[in-house]
Length: 339
Image (cartoon, rainbow, N blue to C red; front, side):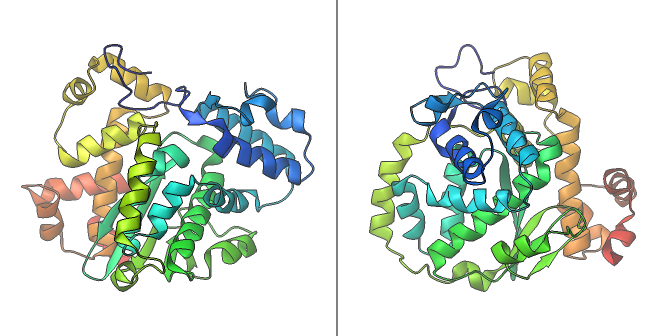
């Protein structure tokens, strides 16, 4: 759903048919057929037809989720998600891939990835926390994934590792922290992501040292990067999801109200509330989610004292800060620091 008086979309929802069927749709279908899955059953109920995967048809996140659900139900293996992540990197637009491989270092490469993320992997997005030693890339749902969250978590991490390996010339030294218990199919994780894996964390993140972030890419070429980027950008047709747009606005203006954010998107507060509900989110949930992420980072990762954390999160009263942290996380600040 898009603002009626907007000439171009400023955000995407699950129903928007913005995505090229030849990319993710064709990748999922090809993996399914390669596994011997029944072609008609794979496409059943998705609204996607075989000829859509070869033409210029645009499909929605909702259709893609229906397709991946079919593939998962019919497949006996646990590696489809990891294969999908790697396959999506192999099928990137050549100009996009050249711009990424020509980046100065991983830090610049990640900035370029954020530009094209919504186009080529609309399911999840990343937000960066960092200090003088480590960058924490926090991955979150751009659209509600419901029962498919682990599948697309695996696909996102696999794609990220494959892409950075392509740019860097070797497997990066990074750690993956997952918000679920250690799976039985740990071999697929180790094969695709390496051995720096930990589970049962408060949120999904990838941790990379600043030294790795600043090391030069194998084919760094600033001139070629700018040339390829200039060719790739006009082909970019997808906007970030409405959920990510609201997140971005609240990160820059944490005290913004629902009516103020709705005005930013040129819709009424009731309309924005309804759109978010259709995506499986609420405005208050998004706000609390962002504050929870900050609290966990400052208290659990950085081990800051209450006064320092409260100040960074713009609390004037430490008592109110402690109460808010307990509401967001179910734990006190001291319990988080000791976790």
